[in-house]
Image (cartoon, one colour):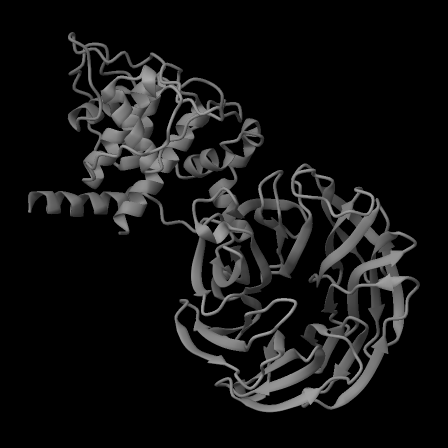
Length: 576
């Protein structure tokens, strides 16, 4: 009973000291589709208090399974799900809201484009073939007059919402055009973008049409060997935000390791004149996959295969002046979660409270698994409140521990060293490390008593050291000295970390597997136990060569990661 009371009390402390802020790096998995071999999600639409998701099972290039629609409330609870057994060779590509609370789905049936009309419960009420000769449909939008605009591989179509045909505009440009995305302007003009292949090279190409299908202008970018506009959105002021990639690899798609593919974004005005072009350098970004104008006027962009040698998905946020104010790796091949295995995002949708729904799939064990995730990107104002001061620290931008440092400084667990610096490679003193632990865990700090001879009552660190000593987290020598101003070694760090973890979780299990370090034979049995435990629960890792280096002094960036991972593992334990 006493232990139970202590754990309950500690849970209250954690609630106070482990902030529950919306973290742009955190992603909540809402749904996972694993009924058949290949599950993929393609699009979603907001209902005002819920959202509908369409997808397909057993999708591959040789055979098709069945399409389906799922409806979720904003909390991620599944309301209903329908699989369309009558369509055994159909691919549901796009979905929009229809009349009376129903839906309109743009689908490819036997590789021909159709409109399928569903009621509010997902039941089929009608279908309209778009064209008997056209290639597969890619995108569908609603214009300002409520008409349906459909983009296929070879044409643009306009229908009334009831399915009545209005016009078709075939893509007839010099060279081969591969449409990627479309958008509709407030003046009801239609914008289509993609690569145009001419004479062995690709241009990033965009064309604007009037509402009656007449071409207004074209725009192209030719930077390197392969250039491609991938996504487009219309901004509040009527400008166009386009993103794509350019590749100097002479006709071959760049791999995620050679870093020859460079993502870029550009702003065009209503007349197609280019205002600015920015390249996303040194990220290995190959392809923006989605861009969305948020309700507050900021822009959210999703990019695939983001960092050199590390496949994954990155989210970038732009302010109203088109400057990046937040960049987050939301899925990484190096994540511990299985959702990171070759994840791709097909569509993103803003719902209530600046939250974003992302649908797509990830590849695992030769199969695709459909996923619905909720992202929590910061609004610009909230971002500045949390990270405004952190981002002034110029020396952490290139640090491998940038994420850990930023989060802990924003949570007031870590501090900089002044002059807009954090000094990530500097050494940590024992006093500094103990203060971090005490503040992280919310251990009660009282007025200094002077109980340790070398911790004087007027020193800033004495209350923290005495609090940690009373809780049994530190030891002293025979003269009761702690030596607070000495640099802390990795050996001393791991003992404190494991003691803190065990005392507050009650997890005293012995781990003998953990990571294997090449210098285990240089450790005492007691130290090896601590290293095994810290590694086994996911708090600790060695260097790139596989050594723990117990006698090395702990650097500030290493300390940030250790403290961050301690917090994450305790939070994980508390949620079990």
